[in-house]
Length: 87
Image (tube, helix red, strand yellow):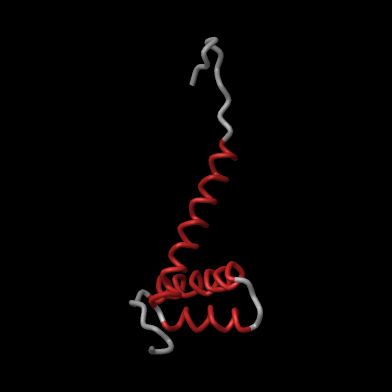
């Protein structure tokens, strides 16, 4: 890649990776907000943390952690998601 003066520009790949991390975190955050609204299992995790005095964001981050564990288990066992607590 050349700059306006004809010199070779240096790409900052670490910065691009930081943006990718931010994008993944944001998409996980949005996915967990939807899971809290529509899934009884994640809603119960969220509500338990809220009842324990956690802020909204702290409770969503706790749901994100469980969400990632559930996604990994789905991938590892190669089976569809089935809620653990029916609502």
